[in-house]
Image (cartoon, rainbow, N blue to C red):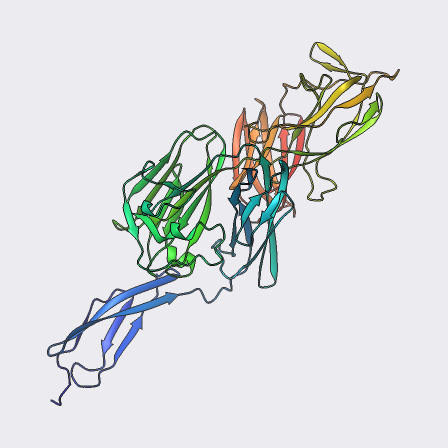
Length: 520
């Protein structure tokens, strides 16, 4: 044979989706034809290392990469969600918000333009980092606008600035020798896995909700491993997982939070858009009945699961902002007092409005009002109170005329610590010869049912032992959820496929009919 020609050419190491065939088994100009079979493969990136060898020339490895895309469906921006949805930060402190745009298949959508704005209280960067000013107050609206393909969608979070902050943990899950400022070591919280450092640089350019770059240089790796965080205040939390992968590999990773699966068959490179690209993802955790968050990480191989960092953020905002009265006003019995307030449109369907004749030492109920009904800022939370001469509260009769009156708006909420009442300065109510008006209900009474919007769905609490029928309708009149039963019950309606918007909730209870409307 001519000098340089090969004999006995063979190819090995091929996977089920790849067939590599040499044009000949001998010669000095041999072509290798790769054929792929994508039937049964999911959208993603696949790699195979094949070995080309010969009887007289040794062997060499070659990497073959296959990218499977869904070319028949053009991705369309369908939703965007900002998290944490509500938060309290200390004056001068920071919190990083995450915007998650998704397409019509509920997959994270790439190539989306993200623009952040804050209504006050501080400044927000275009990567979602809010830096609070020195002034205590709120609630401030954090608005994200996501645009792609001629579609622009918005979502809003609410933030307060306080002398105290919501529970907030930042944990570095990789090589702790990097000592990232403000981030804890993961060793006290994790069981299993080991540190793994990437040889190349991880890109954090433009990442939404991102951590410092050093967080992504290394990961906790190994299957399985478990994180346990105890001693957290009761409430609802956002759990943010930070990811990076040094190779463009198809992995099958799984995560559960509070024994609820949040990721299955997950591949970092596929979601992030390639190797060495940082990614942050947010999930909700319910801690109303416990003080512990558990995160389980599992993979198909002994090392096929990894994360770079964890943030745990209590979804707490302290203020309902009372717009009027502002304090210092003087009214007379029989006058109409316009009571207006701002609050989180996504979280409240009902509030109590209460009056104190003695500078806040005791309170009586003026009304329980459905409250937040409109995204129009001129209509947020409004109630017109005609001042009676007396208010009957149980067996007591309270005279309204005083120099030290106060009004407050208090949410009817399962965990009052999440959104406590907000009061205004003293108002003065003068007496008159007006006829006494009917008194209020007892402040201990609770509504027959209550609706609360959470990140993952509507929570509907039934507070009656009677038979009931519950129906939830979209703004277009489509039935989104139905349930019936008897007795005190809590239902959770998952986020509807119709997406974000107003929903009407109808409750038929014995001979009574109730309706609520909530932005969800």
